Length: 125
Image 1: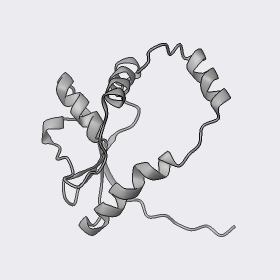
Image 2: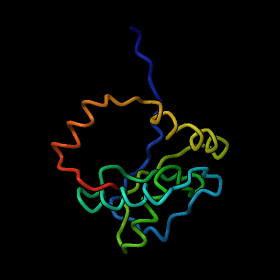
Image 3: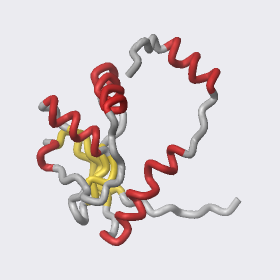
Image 4: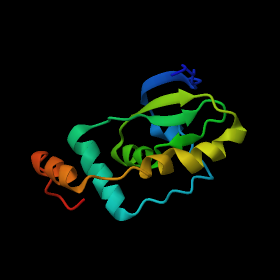
């Protein structure tokens, strides 16, 4: 198999950013229902940050992590951020594909049930 380089757009990591300094992308099409908000709050409360928010250094817009930023702001917490450099023209592509590509994954129901049981997940959130 021939090796193909993939461009690395990550330019900086900041472990503690004030969420008030971050700008929600006006074209973010994702909406966050109450159940998702509750599940995220419970997850952050139990295990903390596992994935940083993604912010485009070029425009200052959040590309991924809008709900995590909202939750942190409500708690008075800081946010870990990965800054990337993406052309402003490419932001629509990122917003339209980043989460939906992950959502294309399918679950193995038996493995998931076992994971939830072994993790002690009892909350409906």
